[in-house]
Length: 270
Ligand SMILES: C[S@@+](CC[C@H](N)C(=O)[O-])C[C@H]1O[C@@H](n2cnc3c(N)ncnc32)[C@H](O)[C@@H]1O
Image (cartoon, rainbow, N blue to C red; front, side, top):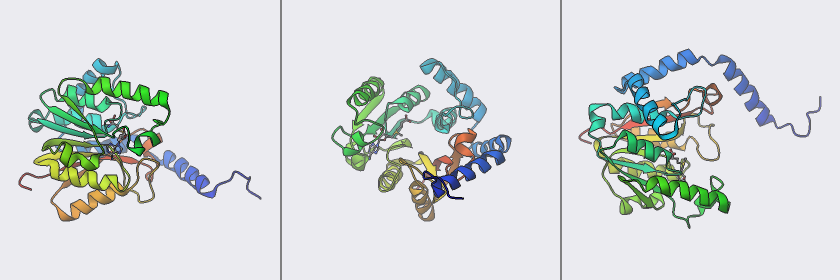
């Protein structure tokens, strides 16, 4: 049989792999495994969930949903951390990759005692216009209006710079760092290097969109973040836990394309 003109073997293989993965996916097992990771990290997901829901309801009228929806586990992790003794003492937070400032305002609500520095690209950086449809003037204007209205709150400082220059522009130190800028090589390598050095001993770095399969990835992320974390783990006593970003089967079932939020703890004294 001659395959149709539009038949692309790699796409067909991905389709078959994904369909088989969806059939195998066991949400109950996955949730049990993820709960063990929270316990290992000393975090209470039920208490965190209640706190996060109250913050999200006041900000957007919606509850957290990463099972049937597309919310990401980093919000839940931040909520859990904010309830710990250590979290209540967090004073300085860095976010790399502000985008529309949604996580920035959630961090602000969860850690009202902290100062937040959030960084995104300057207007003239070519990556700004070439990503997230910001080359379209209408999209760009709406994006900037939303971002600026959110980062203008008290307790938030917006640094408009490529994260390469963060050690000069906003050297910290920080207790908690949210790494959510460029997830491809080379950005992810300098972001992790800077984050590790700017993080106080005893602090935490959370890194978004980590693919653990070398063949996983897409336009905005790859397994490069995982490689950098493993590089660091080989040379430092960093403690790492990889949390599934979304338990939603459409996102998590295909292990090649499943994304993680990696939580790195920098031990005291390092
Ligand atoms: C996925 S979005 C961030 C989402 C946001 N943290 C949130 O949770 O809502 C990634 C952002 O990182 C920014 N970015 C990419 N590379 C960067 C770099 N080298 N320096 C600073 N920001 C960067 C992009 O412009 C984009 O706005």
